[in-house]
Amino acid sequence: MKSTIEPAEDTRELAPSSAESGDAEAQGAAPTPRQLVKLSVVVDEAEFDRDIDQAFRKIGREASLPGFRAGKVPRKVLEARIGLAAARDEALRDAVPAYLAQAVREHDVDLIATPEVEITGGADEGPVSFDAVCEVRPVITVPGYGGLRVELPSPTASEQEIDEAVDAERRRQGSLVDVSRPVQSGDHVTLTLAGTRDGEPVPGLNTEDWLYEVGKGWVAAGFDDHLVGAAIGAQLSFSANPSGMSEPADFEVTVTNAQELVLPEVTDEWVADNLGEFDTVEAWRASIAERISSQKLTQARNQFVERTTSALAELVDVPAPDSMVSGDLQARVQNTVQQFQSQGISIDQWLSATGQSADSFIDALRQQSLKAVKVDLALRAVAAAEAIEVGDDDLNAEYARIAMQVRQKASEVRKAYEKNDAVTDLLSQMRKTKALDWLLEHAEVVDEAGNALDRDQLLGKDHDHDHDGHDHDGHDHDGHDHDHDHDHDHDHHDHDHHGHDHDHDHGKGH
Image (cartoon, rainbow, N blue to C red; front, side):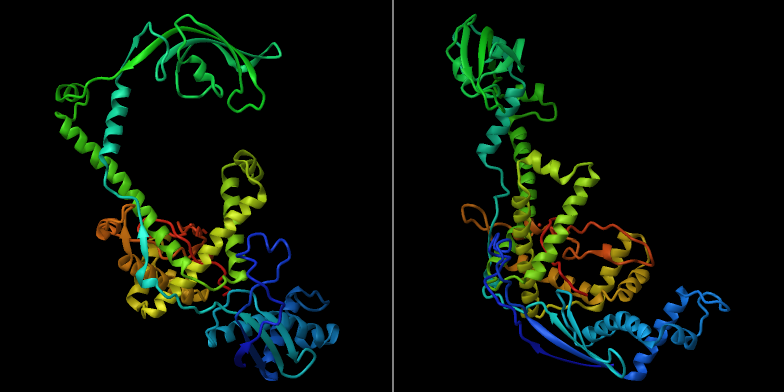
């Protein structure tokens, strides 16, 4: 087999990106420009004749002729019975994809969509030749990636947050005390409630001796306003729209009692008596501050990768290839549907429960896919610009990590990747992970007020991670399928980096 490669032009009528124009695709907008190359492959007659032999063997396994055992019919007999043309057609169907894959590897073509193949010779006899127009992943540059500014919530607890936590505990341990004054917001009132519509009781709006906290706004629009200022024993009549209902109801409400919540005074003695693990107010507040700060640090870490990749995606000023966006979107939809099915929920039920339309749901996923594709292109650009490479030690370590996940030997994992021709993709994914690491180490990280944050604290000392969301599920390790925790959210369809999800690549065509 001999093959050559040359650039190819996109001859379609083009328009602004259908992926970036929201519903433009649905309105029939033309696709975005593609980066194309043409592979021209020639297979000499002797080489292709071996493929014809293989085709005859395949046909022979299915043929049943008197005097011959199944699968043992000689080529000459089959050729006489069915003709050479049938086997040649079979050989073309089976062999051309294999020759194309070989040419893709030889020329290091980064496919992102199924090639368009045209047989140019040998359909009937002689050497076989074909052209394959291949859409390839664009190679871009990302000016400004070294100066990313990422804003994150401060991981330090504020005095207001500490005070709110203290007040919450005081309320939890407060005491209800009867009052004789008119009702105030925040009081706990005991009510007899009757809600009717056209003289008929409304389900859920009729009760006695119901304890309700005024100000919660749970019953109906304006309901609590009628209670504020009411005297004990007052009987109130009014109409209002019950929560979750479109039609008003007539209310008859009797206030039988009112209580106010008396909060305890925060002293060392109270802390020691009621919060046994602390002896002083200072120690209690310090513990609250530590807990809140820990929660906020986790929040900031979770957002670090997402906001870094979002900032990176904004620097990409080239259209995202439609084929990559479509591939990523399809994977997201399938993953979502499968997740709902595993929970016994249909997508229609979920859409109805959340008040979404199918179009709005798909559009939201499409925006995620658009970002994921741009992040993929940008990370590859950063890796190239910074000369980031993956060495043998890195690859062996990754095989070992995957082996632990799938409970196999690293050597078996390696063989599976090599067998599936997936090593190149794995290396690309690992390079992107290293590129993201580089960005996290070099981005300017500040809080809402513009104060610099501690990068080491955000990253943590042990920031082990899964590499770039690449999906090991698609590789069969010695015939066994395995489920891995690589989310193609990639937000997916996303991968776990420093314990956080982020978006990555779909649309790898080989």
